[in-house]
Image (cartoon, rainbow, N blue to C red; front, side, top):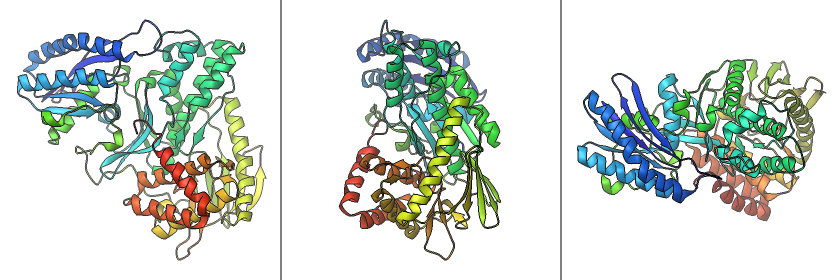
Length: 531
């Protein structure tokens, strides 16, 4: 089978042919390059209107040499509406004239599926790092579930905002990568909340540093080291949460050598496999559209013309994944060994105590790594004790070694909540979160791996306060609920009743203040990309 793919979500006018028998992809692209600033939607659409016919004709000429085209796939969204409509119109006309099936592809899912197709991985965590997006996804219960994502802007757009500020042309990513090679590390804000993250504070600090006279090379170095360390950390947190040992990278920012090196080093350290496609499949391209289109055609997932409208806000978790088996899941059974490796630390059970050692992360800049390990060890020791005094079950702190970033703790529970999910336990998580928040504490990372339970007991223990902090702000409390909800959504067979039970426990224990937090939660949930 040969599938012609057409891509045009923003800047890349691209057409491709995928030959399933030979597993070969031919790509022809004509990218839009603005004279100044970022992408201008009107200019990008004008470019699409001019370039799409040319790249499609080139792809068709290639396909004719192999016997023609059996289906037409196009990027249905997300993206810029004017660009998407041009691509959709071209795809409908072409499918009709050739009398072949029409396939509407989610651009973000295509970024992930090309890596899966080439790597042969079973069911990996997928990190998408592109201009307008940044997601962590895993396949579970028939869809790609969002395990974590940016809460403001895409990673490439964030970098471009800084480069426009210093007067550099689009795209900014390669220019930051080049300048960073001649820079020294500059400390910038590091914002990770569970597996979600934010770039707005980093961008503001980077602009201010440049305006205050810091060398642009140093700002670029700090910017790159900070942003990519955040992405690598949340990717490792997703591996830890799900229990999988496979990571795939997608998206145009994935062309950055430093990001790929960080992710590869992290995976090697924890014994996981890592795959990044070659650059032509990382940037926006029609090859990934054609490859996923072929899988969808084989599954019978095609469109009629009346049902083929484009969707500029087409989220990856809205896509019914018809081409993968229902039994597949990114979630794995929790480890039962005496030493468990989490995202940040190894936890070793030694009788009635556990020793938690925060590991040095070789992928992070040494100054950043030292700061985070120390700050999080101090925060965890203090907040475990404060939470316990507030009435939340936590392990007793038996010893603290700041030099080695190591805690000795009471052993609590006999399993993570991830392996023993129930509505009653989820309700108690909500109750304890309300108690924490009333005491002015945010846990920071209350996933199902950071709650311990004991068979036959109703007690649930909160552990791992490394991302915790003191706060009375409704936003921070809502983020705790959001993080727990995402961890349930991404790993549980029936997530809705579990999260509903958590919210019920939270509202019952927290009163009027809790109602305000749950209202803010709805705002937080709507902040993800394309909500």
